[in-house]
Length: 133
Image 1 (cartoon, helix red, strand yellow):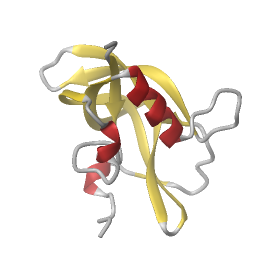
Image 2: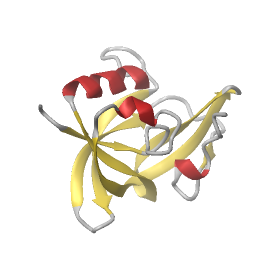
Image 3: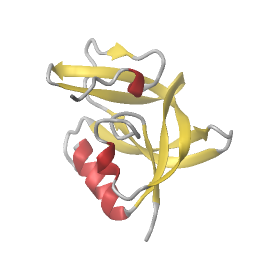
């Protein structure tokens, strides 16, 4: 199996509402990427995170290894379809792991409208994700 590193920062994280979509992925540890995370809630019944990579801020998350099939399923879940105008795109980033090492991984970066979206200053979606119950 070809294992592909992915960094997840929102609902796909352990404890997040969509973590079950990670399938048989292999957890490598906690890390962070340079960027800003926003609270998107255009639809009151649907709230989700939006990452913009780069800058001086940090976004907390987790690094996993996934299969090619899982990566395709995650792309579909994030709405990444080549040649369409999507809210997310998959890009490579440098992940700073808790132990100080750096790893390269894929991440789903927001490319949709932000409007008046709120910045999550602490960079940690799990501190803000609504309880799905």
